[in-house]
Length: 54
Image 1 (cartoon, rainbow, N blue to C red):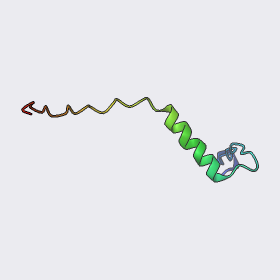
Image 2 (image 1 turned 30 degrees about the horizontal axis):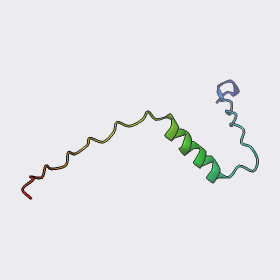
Image 3 (image 1 turned 45 degrees about the horizontal axis):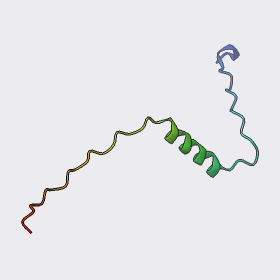
C-alpha cells in the first residue's frame, strides 16, 4: 500500500487528567436527560363514581 493512501490517525479529544470514568459517564447521562423533550403526562384515570346511598 503506498504511503499516500495511508489514512492519518484521528486525534483523540482531550480528557482532563483526574476525571474518572464514573464522573464522565454520569455527566453524559445527565446531559442526555436534559436534552430530551419533556414527556407527555400520563392520562389520568377517573375514579369510579360512588352512589350516595348512605
